Image (tube, rainbow, N blue to C red; front, side, top):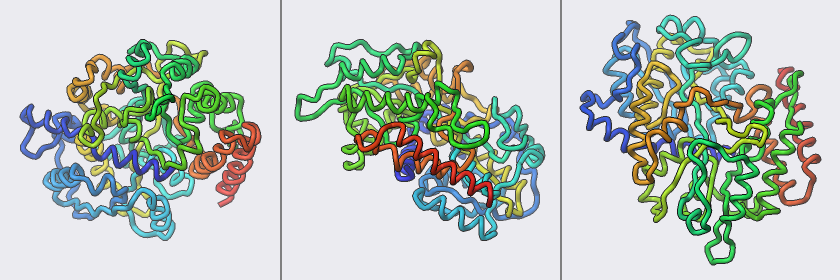
Length: 459
């Protein structure tokens, strides 16, 4: 899973070069920072006068990017007394490096993480609450990030960067070749309808097989249907693993039907053996995929690397039959956290606020920070996708502009989240290859995760 996460995050580092060009065309400032600047950061200037050096631990895919280097120049010009010492770590080594540094007491002032990684750090006692410090830098954690709830015991430990927006991408050529209508732009298919369509557009007769559905060997592709059904209830009321709940069992059985009964997706053994990654969708041999906003960014910017003679379309992500007609999203939040051993917490949050309001936009991603111009983001993204006949209305609705979207947890993030995810992925393939039943697999996952949760509680 970490290897796959690496690929996602590497792709995010390539986001929307055209967005930056569009910003320059609109006579942005000579520093190159986005026009969609934070209202508060755009005028306050340097409100900290002591000279400090912040150690910022992040994955290489972000820190080693041109966008980050350019952002640092803008930040240092604005806050000359706050120096940044980036610590770049490849994603596959990131958790291990972070744990060693923070457990040993080494000074680190700011750490990046996705939902699983940050809650793992919170549970290990690595991070400090930021409620009071945020007020010092003019941030209201209860209002400035939308409906963002405290992380633990009424306290915030994460400074949100962005929330993924999941949707359905489809290959218009595959649909045309099969004479099947495109998915509706606003009304989601049910998963069962998607499975039927995937079967209709699958063509395994030629040398180049065409599968109706593409998936990734990541947890949400197997348990995400169940998360929609039970509102992201990955844990029991007692705090143990809930992965053997009927909703998750049904979710795994759905994927088995698509993969092994309808033959509309690559068998998991073949998928793993070929070391298939999420970029493979763009080779044109798949009809549909559920993916987050990074697929749109690849569609806009990676045509030279993945040349295609077909157009992509976008639609709402599928939902269970019980949720028919509702716009849903798997919610996963990337964030920044301040370790307990930081000696510069206020300056770290000053940097975090600029990182979210400036750097995040420069990569073509939409930050959760509400004091930014979202309309500019939607316009730039729609412009970059115009060759695919994707409209501004579609982009706005599907990429964060629908206030009525129902967000459910994308992954388990509370008790032993790293162990939960890795254990699940280590075991479930045994169900799809027929060596174990779905009940055997889910009960084994629950037993092992419950032990990890209990061990974490006792440490």
